[in-house]
Image 1 (cartoon, rainbow, N blue to C red):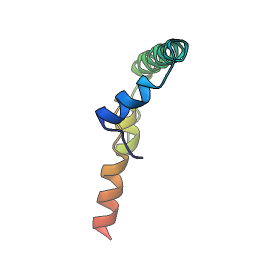
Image 2: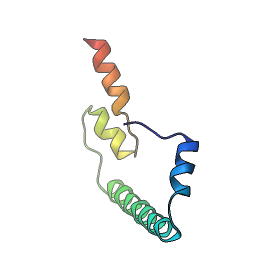
Image 3: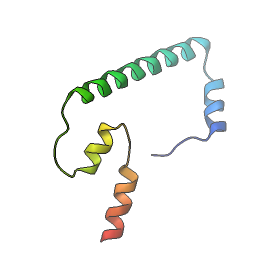
Length: 76
């Protein structure tokens, strides 16, 4: 996954029409609400015993996939 720089993001946003920007805003707000609901649901579910770091990070809303790949690569 490659991330955009702030300048690249601004250039992409400036290319959009007002209607497209409004649609984008609505989709972002929907995704934020979905994330909130997911996090609230996870808080209600008791934690599972185990040592699955990826699952625990996901429960906290963290993305450690790059870190895990690097650890696996170095442990070989």
